[in-house]
Length: 333
Image 1 (cartoon, helix red, strand yellow):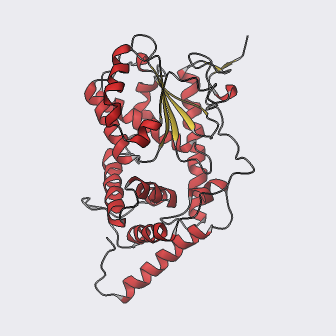
Image 2 (cartoon, rainbow, N blue to C red):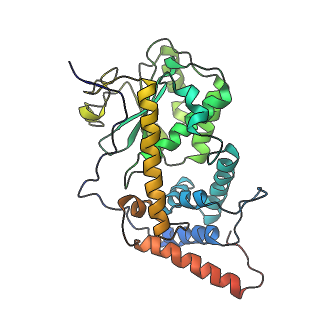
């Protein structure tokens, strides 16, 4: 009989052949530099907020990879479109309370049944975010949404260097007490608008007939890139998406006999995520603590910034000089 596991697995070590993200093309780099300069302006403030100056946590969030994700989301159309999307998300994150209101203590009542679990990583080192609708235990829509977003944010704390996306693992087994349609729509809207380029795969198993029919009906209207990431009733082991040592035995067929016991799992998850976040924040500060630092650099513990992170610091300096020289500065749009 295999030994039971009650806590999250550690983040996989970085393979020796793992390399930082590829450099941008000349056109892409020009757009990126415009966006970086916009948010590096010392006088910058988030539109629509009374106190819109960027907080430390927001500068940390505005990494090089983050900016590039939003540029990809607008298909590298213009810097202005990416800036608009980023500002909408910065405003939403502040108003949603991601840096103060939405805490582990606030959302813990939603977590006691294990309806959402972060456990293991796939063969691309992406963290797995399990959702089990049948374990729904509350009726408070607002806190359900806060909990889903809090858990989503924690997947980023479990992403090693070079990893930017997650696997969503949805199991419809058992009779589900699903969230309301309104709650589901709100969560989907948040994912679509504020977390672009974050979905690696969406793997859905034990799909009820009506849910399956619904997905087939809307499939032609789903973006082809997103549709390609959706897998229904797939064997993640046979397809090489997961190795057995990283996958739950129940329902998914892995080797890990995981059992959710809230008193063991929850503090372990909170501690692991907090440790990574604090470690990366300290390294980010040592690399200048500015907008545009590479996640790769602060996650690998590089003692000196890469060329991209060094460019971020130069952009901040040049923007500051421009502010001094120009009595009536014009913000980069």
